[in-house]
Amino acid sequence: MILSVDASPYLDQTLGTSGLRKPTGHAMQPHYVALFMQAVFAELDVAGATLVVGGDGRYFNDEAIQTILKMAVAHKVGHVVVGRGGLLSTPAASALIRARRAKAGIILSASHNPGGPDGDFGIKINAAHGGPIPIAVSDAIHRRTRTTSHYAIADMPDIALDRDGRHQVDGCLIEVIDGVTDYVALLETLFDFDRIADLFRSGFTMRFDAMHAVTGPYATELFQRRLGLPAASLMNQIPMPDFGGLHPDPNPHHAADLVDFVAGRAQADFGAASDGDGDRNLIVGRGLVVSPSDSLAVIAANAHLVPGYRGGLAGVARSMPTSRALDRVAASLGVPCHVTPTGWKFFASLLEAGLITICGEESAGTGSNHVREKDGLWAVMMWLNILAERRQPVAEILRDHWQAHGRDYYQRLDFEEVDAAAAEDLMETLRRRMPLLAADLAGRLTVTEVNDFAYTDPVDGSMATRQGVQIIADEARIVYRLSGTGTRGATLRVYLERFAPRGEDHRRLPAEALAQVQALAMQVADVSRFTGRTSPSVIS
Ligand code: VG1
Ligand code: CO
Image (cartoon, rainbow, N blue to C red; front, side, top):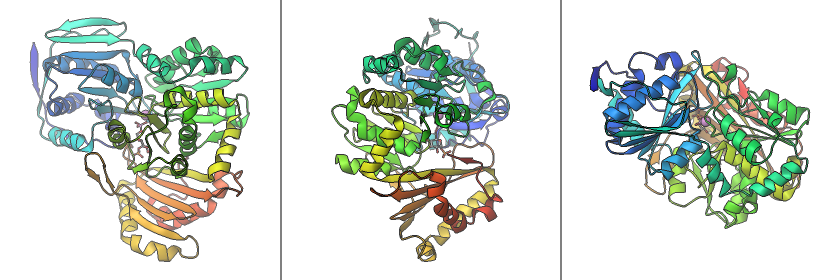
């Protein structure tokens, strides 16, 4: 029996950098998820289609998934593929959408945001290509939510998600599958598993932190069962609804134990972590944390050592705030380097058109054309395969890289949960002052350009404007933008970069190398006055 439920629309269901993201308690309000999904199903026209559904295992996902399955039946969806236990990492979901020729994917995740009743809840919507829906579609969904005052839902018992199975309900097949097998099989087509297993046998030690999030089961199958890594090398590998009270963001601040073990106390050769939904990665070497922008550049420069990329790269891409280290690699390889706004949807378009093979962001997202999302375990496997070929410490690989290309010292400062109006004001003031900044900074920075980043997608011509203010100099760069994934107040992100060319000292600490740029960045935008903060909440 199909019920039509009346309810008042919620007016705040805006999609940000990566889907709908709200405090859990907010998303648990009556009919909140159902009304949002009604708008999604109507916009995507899902009758007869295949859908992929899964998530990162966070609090309230199980209830939301049952609602989505019942609504899928009511909307005459033909086939729903659901991850067992409601679990699917974002990259695994992307692969599954493509493999099953699904029309869309629904990923229940607020990614790197904390979970639990006092944390966040989120829904990412992916398109048939496996990547995030383009802005035109997310805008259309948001518009629909504002007038959606009913939803259709089947009156049926919950579907058992704890074991694989096929459930036929009205005309809809709901198939519960293990989300790990197909994903590991995909990685097997790209990487030299034997050589990586050899590396582990040779005494090379690794530690992986799943942060009690979705990559636990994937990492156990991949590293432990397939590649022979000892079980003790995996940390926090059991997914938990509240991520064990941790904050599943793989940066030095939130993955402090891993960083201390590998970088601080040098107790392992290699360390890695992934976020809530498995699309980000942190790479740590004995004695050092690899900046995500450097990691991206090293991966691109060494990709030819990995079987899946032996044929070379069609091109590469980075998000605008990501350091220019990738541009230098692209120039030396003679391939184009695209620069996009923040968020994977822009890469998805370039990947789909075959314009790029590898891409990434400073926020620890790296990926390739094997799926249309960033992929945490893929990045870890790229490093492992490169290490298995080069048999050098991570620190030495970086030193070689900087010697060949120069080093872009890099840091991101986050001012979290600041007053939203004050943050907007800071950005607007900065935008107004853009024409004056070069003169203001004369003598301290040789500014070549100041802009508010705008982007035209080379494939479909769609435009994105006001993507962040950048002050570009030959020797340095400062970028300001507001986060589109936060759920409380606003988060101001300030990105700092300083170039040390070949032959210069590359052994400085980033904080020290960037101290002057940071002082300028704080001063130019009057960060302390607008935010009331003299120092950032997180530095990554
Ligand atoms: C952040 C990152 C961005 C990333 C996005 C989604 O967005 O900066 O690079 O693509 O999160 O990542 P923002 O708008 O807060 O800066 V995830 O792991 O949530 O899918
Ligand atoms: Co994520």
